[in-house]
Amino acid sequence: MHRIARKLVPTLALIALVAGSGCADRGVPTAPAPAAVPSFGQGGSPNLASVATFRQRPSVTIAWAKKWIGPEGGRLDFQGFAIVVPAGAVDRVTQFSISLPVDPQGSEHVIAEFGPHNRQFAQPVTVELPFRGTSIEGSTTPTIVSWSDLWVDKGAKVTPDGQRLTTETYDFSTYATSDAVTMRGGSITVSGG
Image 1 (cartoon, rainbow, N blue to C red):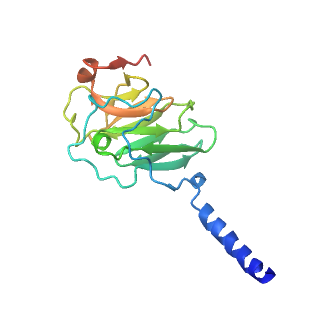
Image 2: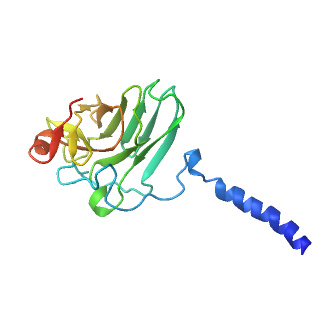
Image 3: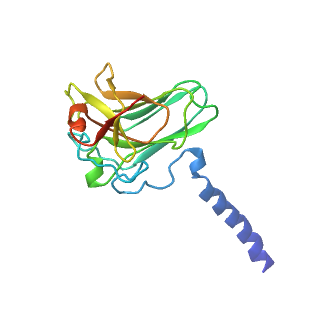
């Protein structure tokens, strides 16, 4: 009996070590994100009716990415979406993330959940969303909106290469792109800051 136990204990320890090596603390995805219309943000599922769509739906097999970024700043790029963290925005190493919907109703839309949630940044952080190849490319009033019970217009600038829209924020939620004129005719509030 002792001989079996001596052989079994090292094997179990090795299994535990291997199982723990994919720990989310290392910033490596360990499981796929839920395949549902994004219910991120506080206040339930966003209304996608006025959200821009991709001209050609992206093929998303991994629906999220994350990266540890410290006080020196850094960047996380994923499927045309990005987070740009300037120096001093966080006071310690922080895990940033971008999550995309993978279901048929959500994945055609230019929408993503940015994290971490419930965190105020000391400096504004830039979020970037795809513009070229979307239903609002060529719009004279493209904008980025964030979800918090309703869409809030955050304003946006087109990057010099025309690929993305950018805006700055002190906290994260779900962000999407839209045409400002279309959104104002629907359910949008203009941000006060």
